[in-house]
Length: 232
Image (spheres, rainbow, N blue to C red):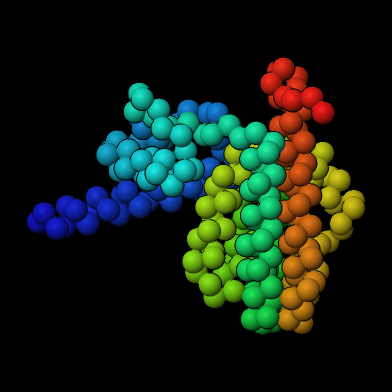
């Protein structure tokens, strides 16, 4: 009986953790926002214990900042921290993209095209939550083909750090990318189909660089407006 109870508790804890990760990656929380055990337990329809354990895990992983009053907070990153994450993401995600392309198949390319089409529909309808979820799915399901699970874990952790900032990309950056880069995800799909690792790497690198440079600039400008930025 005790083992059954423990197993159920582990399932609920893992469910709470996965749900919180999905919310963080998808931009449901803003930078600096507090996440309370009570609110998440109510939202997920579970007891506070698995939510508390999930929050503690995210705090221990450096994704959230711990608070004294049974809560956690989304960290506030400065521009230099975002630039550092950008450099790391370029290194690890480009490696995953190259390996994935070399393992590419027509089936994977077809699957990625389906996700890209779903993303376009979500973007056209203004469904930002679905949009961000599909951005994540496209990238990570590409990377999964690299067959390097530890590398994918590192990538997922980095996405959790930048997820709360993704809303800053709408609408200006998103519209500018559509004009300047066109159907870049189709070029990724074609690269996977042809096992052209150079093409896939180039598109992934530019996507990360463009997005996180844009976010870093916004964060830097906001810091200057608050009087907290350094002058060049």
